[in-house]
Every structure is written in structure tokens, then in C-alpha cells.
Length: 174
Image 1 (cartoon, rainbow, N blue to C red):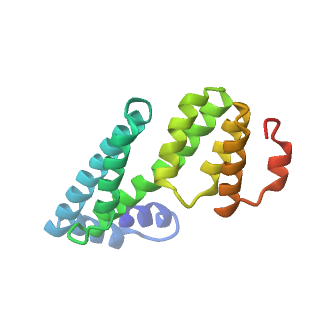
Image 2 (tube, rainbow, N blue to C red):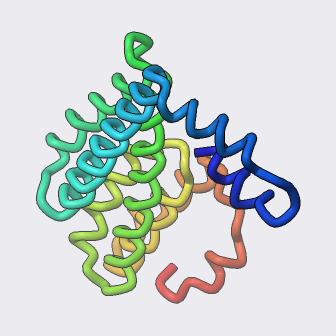
Image 3 (cartoon, helix red, strand yellow):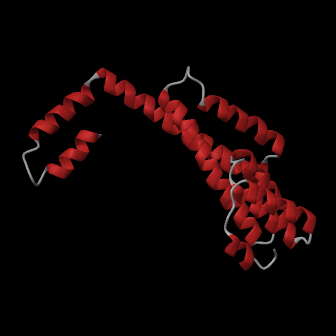
């Protein structure tokens, strides 16, 4: 793959026949074929797991999330797996943090607070040290006029590192 990129970059500047020849011979080697096949399998598995978790935001309960996320964490640290496989699980973990933020934010904007609370539980599970889930909890509780929980959630957000006071001041519900 890298050889093909170099060929396309250098083709107008210099003769690239040596790169083409080297690239062709590399792609014919058994070890490169095996590595590419393994990477293809990992990519397919990553897409499958990403789709599974994406649909789980709407379909699955917290018991499912706790179990499956725990398995994901275990796999991302399993030294018997290849580095590529462990990296795949880490990428999915990162994806889940972004997805949880997006689902939560969208539900809050749509004033669907029950869904938001579910998504925020998932967000807190996958990114417990991120202050944003606590801030979002504060927004939801304030919108529902539950001032005690809004206050404790905002306090939790601050304890987790939230410092955007201007954002809090501009928030109509808080």
C-alpha cells in the first residue's frame, strides 16, 4: 500500500519503475498476503462490532452495556491478541465515547429526556472521567426542574474537570 502511494506521488518527478517492481514483489510475498488477509478480517470485525454497538444505543439495556463494554475493555488489554486486534478494540472504545456524546446531545436537543438519561448512563460507563456526561446530566435535571440532582451533577462535572463557566451561564435551564 505504501509503495502504491509513493508511486502515485513520485510518478511525475522521477522514474518509479524501481518502486513498482519492489511493490509488486512485496505483494507477491506470502507474509504480505497473510498480513493483508488478517488486516481485512480485523477491519470486517471492527465494522461488525461498530454496527452492533451503534444499534445497541436504542435497543439494549444497561445490563447488556455493562457486560459487553466490560468484554470490550478486556479484549483491548488482552496480550494474547495481536497488536492490531487490541488496537481495533481501543478504536471501538473511542468510537463509543463519541457516539454516546452524540446520542446524548441529540436527545437533549430534542427534549427527549428519558432517552437522554439512558444515553448518559452509557456515556458515563464508557468515559467515566469525562466531565461532559455529568454536565449533560445537570442540563437534563435542570430542564426537568430537579434542582437537587442538577446541582449534584454540576458539582460532579466540576470535580471531573469541567471549567466552562460561560457555558453554564448561557444555559437557559441551569
